[in-house]
Length: 261
Length: 300
Image (spheres, each protein chain N blue to C red):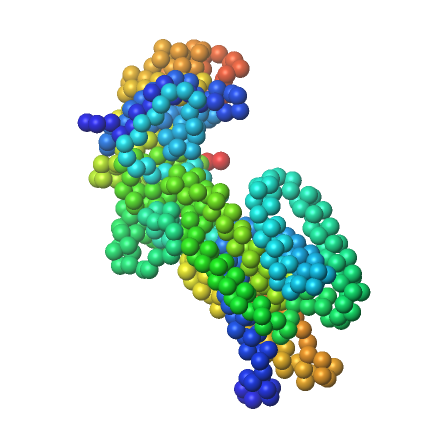
């Protein structure tokens, strides 16, 4: 299968600081990829590179298809005049000039997407009045309505309760399979994604390790990535990445462990 | 009933015809642009532009030009300056903006004083600060209408891009929306709207016509199309009713001195806004307050 996305030795510098170094991986159509790593590892930067919002310092990126994007958090006021159905509709034509006339086909397509993500109950509520989990569902519908080949999601599971996390992961897995959309989802906790991930891109200290979960989430691989010894514990079917000693690099790790546990 | 509302001569007066026509066009433009102003959180930018437009109107008066050209030049010029310096985006801008706006009004005071000395036109200062839709110079009417249509066209042309940018600037940029240019074009439309409102209700009060109907509409509607339609309707209703009442007030005490039309328009707009707090259906909380099952047990 021809690949949808290829990153070749990508490096990014922000304000003179090296954020990412020599990151290489590919994504095939329909593939579900987890972009895993502690907070501040450069996951958002990597997504911005793929979106074309962040220039690379080294390496190259090749993208063969349209991209949908679900940002980490909407900074939107409750009085913004956008209902959930308006937001999903903007996913179709929000980038176009002029105004549009109402159309039946469009309304049906919006309703179809709302049903697919389980958001039809609050279709006429304002987006700014919804909870974080509800907004995520709406933004997934917004991103998918234009039928992108690749869907990028930036920490969609952060700050959600366990029920919402499970709901969103299953919605994503189902839609990706049904529409053949490839998914690249960033998360600091890999556990909710382990059952659905085909590939893991583990980012730490600005570098990335790529492969299946079993290949990448190994003490030797991650120790090399972090530049210090880390242990991988499997407890009750959950994976915990634990730094062996308290060093300067630990805080990000420690948070990682807390989140994972 | 109507006989009591419309005093004799209302429908046959030339200035009233002009006021009703221009007032409606300006009210619609201001309301439509205003919806995006409130949505983008740029009400303060609108207010800043109106202060600077005051200086422009005063300078035009001193130079003996119609004040509309002063409002337009300074309003649009200030909008361009704001965009270029990025004053909208910078933190700690309040102090700098406050100082600039203070000096703008100080200059306006000087220009108006000097202008009055020169031309001894009583009432000119009042017209520039607080407007009077009854004394529009007929020769400027085509320019007013053309500017209004231009600002309206820009707002409607960019409507979807502006909404998408409000939702998320990153999504908009990733989908190829030139976010910066769209913001700049919109800010110019805002500058033009401020100049137009200044002609109808005065430079100092122009924000009322811009923000008031939009803010009211956003409280009583949910979607963008209805918000724009309701804002335009409120703007036109307040402007027309204000014109009728101002015409009537000629027969009120003190007799033979009409009350300023701006007073009526602004009072009606504020009254309408306050009404939205009276109706229980519209008195909705800023955030949803019932516990939401998806939200209830979310970890910190």
